[in-house]
Image (cartoon, rainbow, N blue to C red):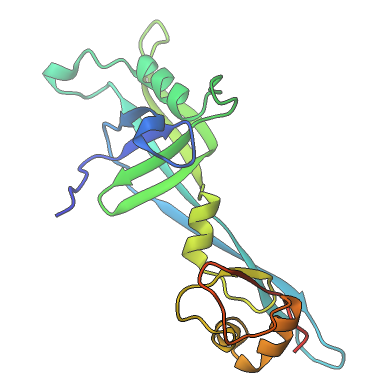
Length: 223
């Protein structure tokens, strides 16, 4: 059974593979967010045919997801054994981990958010701090960090996840044992009859003898 995180944990990495070997550090919050906004943005191409009374929304792509929430850094009401909590130091450590420039990789760190069922890979898009309580000497005792993280997905992972089979894209498929050219055409074009055109493009003389390991190009076809 997977372990459920009681506190939101923000882990920083040098690379978008998010592997333990690239881990920079982690930050466990003192107070979990009271709410989280999770934004999905889908883009369409709007085209209107001649004589049509309305436009057609044709799917173009999905933009990276975004997650936003507030974090509280508070030293105004804490338990006796936590009186050493330093808001200024906590803010500095947090900022260094998630938003400051990392000279080793010449960019900011990638981060993974983990809490309960939440697992989000991304990087900070926006961050701002609001200070609401101070000591007589002006030292912060309470602050709120407003954060927006934008999704980061490794290209290989994205392609595997989307498993694109659009007939409007060029596909290069590695033949597996048992694959046939009509079968591959059906998978991509929803019509096995295009096997002759694909055979011509790939200069395949005998479409019945595909060899495992061969690579077959299935281009966009004017259907």
